[in-house]
Amino acid sequence: DTAVSQTPKYLVTQMGNDKSIKCEQNLGHDTMYWYKQDSKKFLKIMFSYNNKELIINETVPNRFSPKSPDKAHLNLHINSLELGDSAVYFCASSQEERISLSSYNEQFFGPGTRLTVL
Amino acid sequence: AQTVTQSQPEMSVQEAETVTLSCTYDTSESDYYLFWYKQPPSRQMILVIRQEAYKQQNATENRFSVNFQKAAKSFSLKISDSQLGDAAMYFCAYGAANAGGTSYGKLTFGQGTILTVHP
Image (cartoon, rainbow over all chains, first blue to last red; front, side):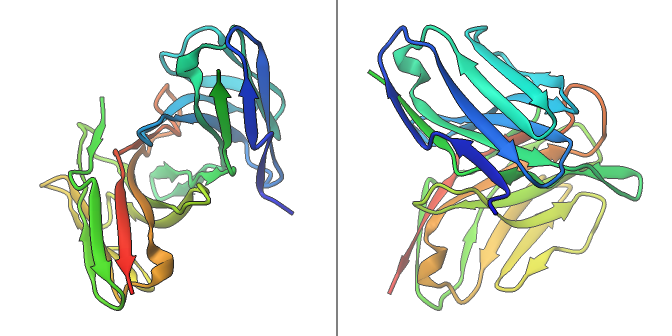
């Protein structure tokens, strides 16, 4: 019973192709995220969705389109793949917890999808 | 914009010894959270410890503790009695505390520190 799962774990494809990475969480969380980890291991947020609504959209090329059919799923579709898209993509989820006057959201990460564009 | 800096690309420690990983951050907000994540070779991101900025007391989780210096914007991780299983890449991360707005839920990560544990 994996908390946050991603498929596939590895994806090798040719430049110019369109591909999707799926993410599912069974934690009942209302917020999901996509992060990109580049070849230097730098992790950066791409998108976040809260209850199927887009909240964060960092400066990501519009070839990347997240889709959230329900709050347990957040898929990432990438059009016209480029060499620079090669990276590990992590999905994460969280549930807002109110502590005093501030809110806190521990993020649970999926195992990552290593995308290689040839 | 918030930034997180880890100035040690690599650190090493002997098994059973203590090691400290450094992290500094920059923010204009007064309420936020700080985290240390561990990424072993399996690449799974694992939360090690968290610190609420409004708390003066340093967080502790078993062998892991932090030294949180809010005025200096410093957040170091101390690992005591290091074990071979501690070998991994460690990321410091900053998270905004206020709900709503475009920064909600966003974690900003440092560059990471590779920790090697020698037997």
